[in-house]
Image (cartoon, rainbow, N blue to C red; front, side):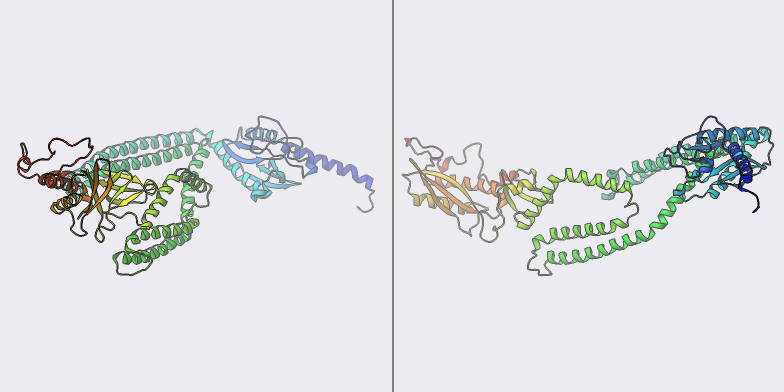
Length: 569
């Protein structure tokens, strides 16, 4: 060849190129209806000899309802849609009179890989058809297309065989009959279990007594049992329907890809779920270990604060009154810290759905928790200022009564009328709180009642009468001793204030009723006129009640203050 002139080689090379182009045009050429587009991002050509480029939407080659491969390149001016239509027409011609036994292989061409059926080239795959970002190669794509085409050809031949179609019909009819029988059994079992099990459970609950039976009845556990049975029946029905559809689709060649998709979807979901569980075992172990360590520290914290609450441990900065709320706060903070540390190890914590749900929950809490946080901070203020304790008799604003509880959000007060009043902690903090029980056992808490007496009565006599009335009153403490104060000198009378300490401040209404009765008796006994509320002039006779009229009808005997005990605290 060395002695041949270059000019004599050009016609031969031209003829060879023309033959290659004709063969490739035969493989890639044609025009018909396009298939489903899957990619709309054209790219620059990389094979100039075949005039390959990416300038049109990709198309999926399907034959007999089975996806074969995806074309992305325009070859010899034929778009992916035109290539697909041409291949489908060529396959129809090849299989028009085929009776089976056709073999699909591959062979390498110049810049492409051809798919061959019984020695005849049907179509080719070029490198531009390959999705390199997904890790595919040209040979791998061609081998996969050949395998799928072989299966599609066998199903096409099978669909033209009446005996095989009849067998598929028989299998589908049998599966359908079995499906309806199983569904009827599921429905019958649901009706029996949904009636008998809850009824039997209710009968057993009726035989029980005590708090356990009341708790089960209040929780409506039998209704929950019915719902559980309904969910199980629905799940079994869905699984039966799913498997029935899968079997029926796979019984016919044309619908077999749908059945395979359903089968692989279910098995794939279960496989993926199992793999996720196995993969998450180390993280779950780590999260569980973190929570166990947190629980250990919470138990240590609870033991310490319980000892301080009971007085077995003397902590200068921690009194018995605040030991209990401090224990709860410490336990809550420890658990929150443990959850924050364990959160990244929870399965799905890094998923977008989990993050979105977390953001949504956080937003809802942020928008709706401003008042809750205000109440909780006010509760901490009440707790650590020690302004209220359970059992204290207090006045908060216009409410007076005994403290039943001081919670994180509100305080509950039982009034002297037997009412339960709930006061938000923020309201307690913003109002003046008077505690009548704090110094009751030591210095005593004084309650006062005022009367007005004319100037013609010696103040020493008035003082003695008031002290005498206090001494006669049940429920008034002798120590500290009652006190009398002249609080004002008005135009026509003097105002006296009697201060007494009560044995039980919560019985103030009853004791003050007794005290007022003793004052009236004492002043009437000594003919001293009480000029309250107004004084206009001296009457002709003193306005007093003689002892002989103290028990005028319908009064019988001495009226004790116990008659009004029903309104006491």
